[in-house]
Length: 325
Image (cartoon, rainbow, N blue to C red; front, side, top):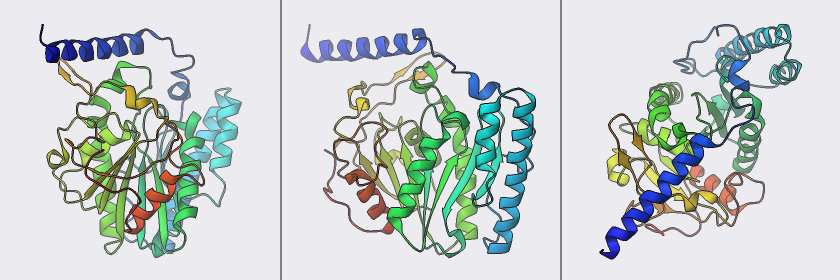
């Protein structure tokens, strides 16, 4: 048997094992976040920002979202979920700034960090698997640290706008959830562009969120698309994304996602795997240094990845730039 054939069979076997493991491994409490009821949100899931991003307009939108959070808190308390109710009470703090909130089906939200009306640079964080209301603190922490790193005249938006897959599930190996999410992300970013026409907008896409960004990318008016902790985006190369944005890729030295086989199978009813490694020369992204952190460490305080992602958002050159790795 030819060496290439053996390599192909090995990659297929590895991916098959990964799929089998993702389906077979029991996930404790996986349905918990989606199981807590919540009322219908006042702001629909088109989730576009207000047409005029002025302090009065935003104050009204934030107040509407705060009312939706408080309604969800009352519903959670009535359901007997005191932990969720307490968490929602914290989200309803008047200092928090939510462009939208929907507590149903695991939760959808977009929270602003910084002064959006004055922002010359806007970063939209698109999270990956297992991001929901019960685990929102991780996304919030990263957004807050990035906003601090960026400083004045910047805003970071934590966009939890889709039904994320569980890390250990077949859904995390297919683009289905990304296909569902892409229209909402595209509408949101286009709304931002209308509201803040002069701002530099960057999409920051972590893990499975990179697949969402790739699906939303064609024709989207953003300066940068940053893929980090990505196993692939179900596209052969940067050209296939059909974007004028500069596409960046970074991966920490201890990120387990580096071991995921970079293959893709088109089966009768589903496509499994995400194909080409975004870090490879074949994909053609600009590579930035991400340090030695793990899969959830990219926005940690003081990390090379946080520093370089902030530089990209500012329009500056990050360290270790090149084509592929």
